Amino acid sequence: MLKHASALLLAVGLALTAACSSRPTAPAWEIANPIEPLPPPPLGITASFTDLKEPPTPARVRLGRWLYFDKRLSGDGTLSCASCHDPADGFSLKTAVATGIRGQHGTRKPPSFENEAWTLYPYFFWDGRAASLEDQALGPIANPVEMGNTHAHMVQTLQAIPAYAPYFAQAFGSPAITQDRIVHAIADYERTVMSGNSPYDRWRLKRDQSAVSASVKRGYDLFFGKAGCDQCHLGQNFTDNRFHNVGVGWDPAAKTFKDEGRFGITHQAADHGAFKTPTLRDVVLHPPYMHDGSFATLRQVVEHYNKGGEANPWLDPKVQPLHLTDQDVDDLVALMESLTGDTRTGTKVLTDFPY
Image (tube, rainbow, N blue to C red; front, top):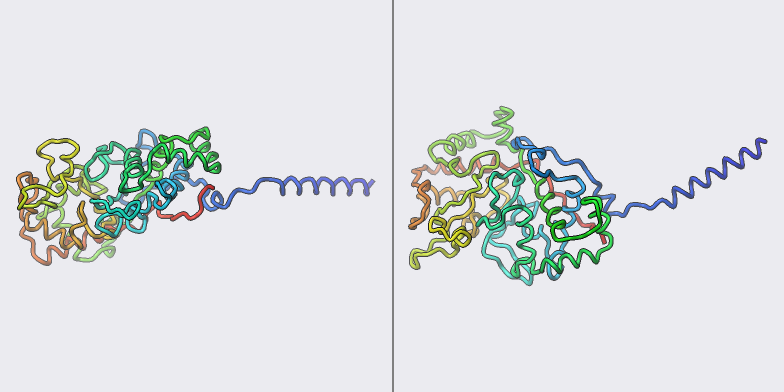
């Protein structure tokens, strides 16, 4: 009897071992990138994903992260979204303009989209031509100077990669790979790109007086006082998401702008040379500055505003000479440097993709 029982147990054990060994093993890219809960907003960002009409889902965010770093979205497989919006550079670049497909150069600085999930106004890009993060994701893919692809060819490329289908099914309920689903996933990943918990946040919100220097504290008083920077750089992301002409790019001889900015979209006279106010969070990570990268340092930016911008017929009336001292300029720069977050999500650079 005992002999039969032992034999039965051995047979069951062997069967279980065989079943476990035949169980499919998750591919390396899935093991390295499991579905994870949405990250909580860092200190300084008071909004929540539940505030959004359609919050991102963990499955869409993971899929979007793969797509964001996948160079196969470009026409020749050499560029990804991250090529021009690098996490290491605050989701911008340390160059005046981006370099696109076949070494072509754009005309504008890649803007950061940190904390853009909760923007009050649906304006994306320097000129506000995109109405959503989804629209913003679509634009560079088909731009012949940027990623140099077509939307149809991008879809075909991803449809030809069988390993992607299960992750589209997890994210959207079916394995269909469509243009709308691709950019929805990328946009949901971008919605989790947040910066906060900076020295500034710890000083202002945690009352940690040692988090910043005396220069930062003086810069704060200037920023919200004499310099009036908060007329445009306001709120938790230090931007009004509106458009202003501050004189950058004005050609006094030709009496025109090298880049007309928002005017090219609205054709309203008041929008000549107007560009979207950029966030100041992590701004120190991606010099040079302004829409054309024409200022090498933050000090040059402050000095531009100190002199009252560059006079032109459409100069924003908020731009006036500030009469700042050299110390004042240094203090304002110190304040902006204190906005560098030590908690930035979405910074994981992927090397493994579904194949």
